[in-house]
Image (cartoon, rainbow, N blue to C red; front, side, top):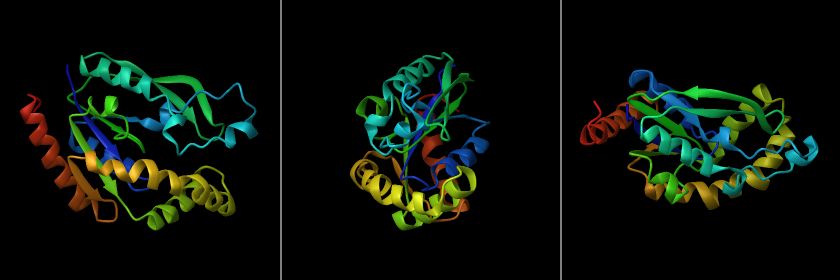
Length: 207
């Protein structure tokens, strides 16, 4: 089965993952693949050194592997998505099997950044959210879920996250087929996204 591949990009904590989850529910349980799973393998470095990596630069990701995986999926083949540990800043060695389906969603900061990756996406969505709103969301998430202190979250946001978003993420909105607001209710953004996806899918023969 050749799936219709959907890309969702936007700044950190803009609402990409939540939008992807809600779209997947409406698209017969479409598989979701996270670009975050493709951060480079850093296990050869001490943990303190890994933590100093700029994870908000495109060079931090092995997007070429994801590109190969999406190309395989586009030809109807399954692939194994790496499992990444944010606590240890490296891959765990485990993988998650992604089987072909009617629809597949890939979401992440730089999903619309690389031309080679964009060429594999049949619907491209950008989630636009004010960066101050993104910071407040990230602060709550990282303290609650990733064991970070408020001070460390703020320092990282101003040192790498905000500059990375401004330089590498926000400009990719120009490549999107649809721009949605990450600050509007999903009752508004999900139907708008579904309409664009289904129109594009119909044109490529996917229901």
